[in-house]
Image 1: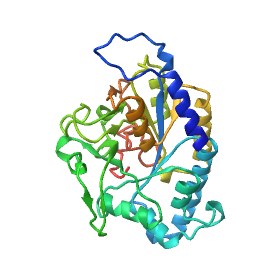
Image 2: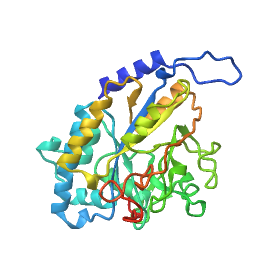
Image 3: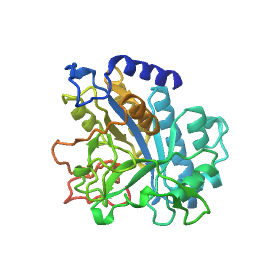
Length: 331
């Protein structure tokens, strides 16, 4: 993984121009040199009561470890973001085994595979600080990435709440948000207004997709392979940063879905425009190579009934037509 990241940065440094400066005359560069930074994200949801069912935890853990292994083998980055029930179950049931080199699954993901670990919280019981605490209890330092939150409508937005240090509801532990990811609408319906490729600092709850705030937000665009195809088809400015999320829900993992996901990765591996990165790594690239210059490319594709936003997918992974199946709020 380290070798992959090093080579990725080398390719980037030698093929991309400096951040744009409107006060200077710029030279037109071949749009094919623009990079698209792809982030793969997986959520574990609190509705699955893993902490009350060791068998359910074990079977899900096995699939999750298999998924992590294929991502590692394919040399792509990954952000694992879990809510509290799976993490609490791990503190109870995960003693490590041969598949994880004797470590609990979270330590294995971080220490052996080099993946990024972020908190994800619906905050119905355990808030973001509580989830971060459970990550630390499993021997991993939680990142400062907010792994999904309600951003719209404005009167329900948690943007202001996330600007400050959060104190745990359950545990005496505090956690400070540093990076925003997974902006969503409650219920994950009609949220294409939040689908953005790029990095910026949301101005306010009323103007989420405008720059001018404090915390950087990484856009997931339309978080599916279709979204990636659409983004790659565009005439992109090589001096600006473009981001794409690919979401795979933990409860949607199966032998078949893992195999299909691997096949999708392999379709894009030869495309030199794509850089597979983690969220914290991406912010570092944005700061070092793009001068922290904001870019907001809004989704302009057709409206979709899949109920999919930056925060991920619902139910079986694809919500059918809205009149047939309404996406729940637990994505």
